[in-house]
Length: 262
Image (tube, rainbow, N blue to C red; front, side, top):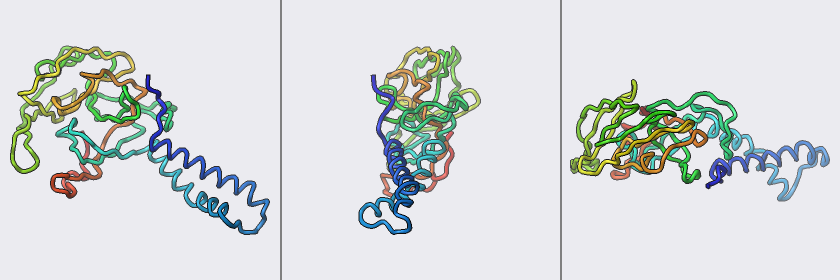
């Protein structure tokens, strides 16, 4: 079973904060009184000066990234058309409660995911990887996906054909049908490929877990294959695209910058 503790950028920030803060405190409370007004020289003095200068900056970055907002990059097309490869998004880290960095222990419960949220979470099979999907099923829900149609607690989620999703390269090749799907009060876009087999199945969401799917329904590796997301794996709620890079044209996708995620 994979450990919930994994070393990532957050772990590096914690280590740097502890080291630089410890050196700064050691100098302020013990070394400086012992040497009086004399200026420390050599390598030790350089380390102290570095720690004194960078500790506040590293601490601020750690606090912002761990408890407020964290940036992520979209690496795959599983959330098309909502999120594109090359989108850089911001994630609200306190949306689902305050958690300690690295160990991910919840210290302040605030709220829980709602159906339709675009959620970042640690992949249950490998918590060192962050995934992003849409919340479809809440604890206790009965989820069924049948013939490209989503059912929640026996009720079909309304879908309306909105057009066709074409190749962004300019060739105009139709890649999928695009539908507007309504989950409770939220309407969002999904892609369906009529010629690809449907990943049908029936699922009962256990207590403390969530069922998630990608908006690119036939191009997403999600709860239909690997199961549910436990509450302890929640990272945050995606809310805005702060930068987007068009890899085909090798330039920023200006129209996407600043868009809210829904």
